[in-house]
Length: 318
Length: 318
Image (cartoon, rainbow over all chains, first blue to last red; front, top):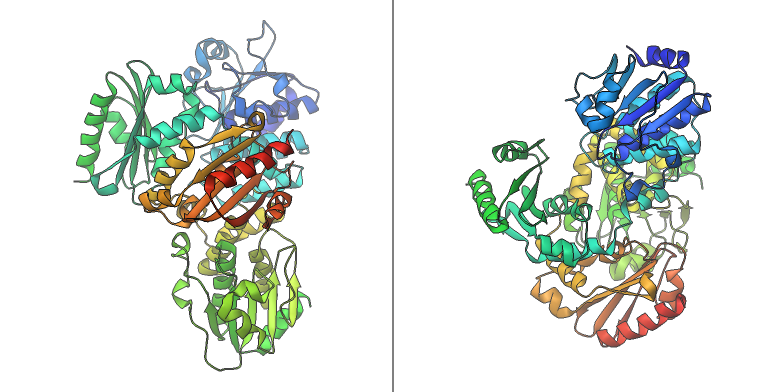
């Protein structure tokens, strides 16, 4: 179904249940809220649902007070699923519930999406928000500052602030129109990228103090123990971008960060500049991901995991 | 003089001496090389001059092999000065030499520019490259990938990757056209933001280990001694973005980094989220800058400077 046909379908319906994936990100929540505000402007009843709490760095988005954390009771809902295409990605509660509805529209931009939905629109593009942007055009919605800000945040998030591979001329063309609709780009950037808790810098100091280069400088590896998270009063999210940061070291092809959130429970993040496919490395340890970013979970002793991983990484470059 | 008139003036001349400020940045060098390549495409003789070596992170720009580090001998040169408007900013050699020429065109985007030039075009905009972009349009130059990449790097640098205050809808509109002319945005971003020497992370660890919050968390302050630069085998540029990084701590309004490059010679970088004007603070110590970023140089003992500065900073928030 084309976006034009989906716009016509939406015009016929009155009650919308909107959802995105678990651990929702900027693209998922931004797309959800932009479409919520647009449908409400057309007089529709909208139930924007999240299975997980909105993350701190997005807890200022226009319309976030509309978000519901529980499912509706009864009602004749048309579901719109954003930024994913499989029931399992909606969580234990919403997944089965959405599968029980007679009309489910999926809007997704992922190559591996799923089969959920009575109507599916999947376009491999830089963000689900790009699809929502075009859908709003078909719906004849004029972009308010509130709608535009949600779309801008979504696009900024999924393109790494216009820096990732999927960034195109169209990304910039949309950003231009969103700014013309009232978005303040520096304010958004500051909210998204300049709002780190002090605990993150405490963790960073520890991760830096254990940073080692291997394989003639092609591999960067470090670790954080559960004691580190405790003593820094830090949460999981605080170390989210460290592996990516260590990939920025000149000459480094692959970076790895071993994170023990709880004693014995270890998550490993792998990042690559692209010459090595870290998804394959992660798969060896039972994990997944893609060429540039992948990871796996395991149990055991950090130093043993580090030794195993280092051996594997050194073998890649020997 | 309008850009249209400047384009007409350039068409009449054959020999161009191009220069930008000392400690040249992405906007200065990108604008210089873009205009060099454009003028050469028109069959002109061009002498693109830098007083300082091109920094490592820009040492891949298309056309960089054309750069001259010495002044020409004789010849009937028309000078084009980019990204600054005062002879003093061109360095000890080029400054007086340019002042001796009969035709000097200044293209600058700074609020405080200077009085250099027989023809001055100063537009307060997000980058000097934005002026060059429009000038090339007036000159009827078609954007090659090489020219476009230089302009994109310049715009990316001066807007902090589309994140600073001066970023506008026009910034994105230009970026779109530059990508349509062949720029690879993710490749540029990777070259500009993912190419740090290991020495930078060694310094960062030291700066983080001395990071202190003052004034109920509104001030972040740290220092690096000449011993740190030595033991990390680090250069000045390695700590360039630390003050900006410390401003990203939640709740911090002003950040300060005290850097002793050589024993007793101290440079202080100040960053603000905008509520406090750090240019005023820097002026108190004999320095300058603007509301968001300022600095000053001084001589003396780091810990005494830190105490003085901390007292001033605490007073701002008391």
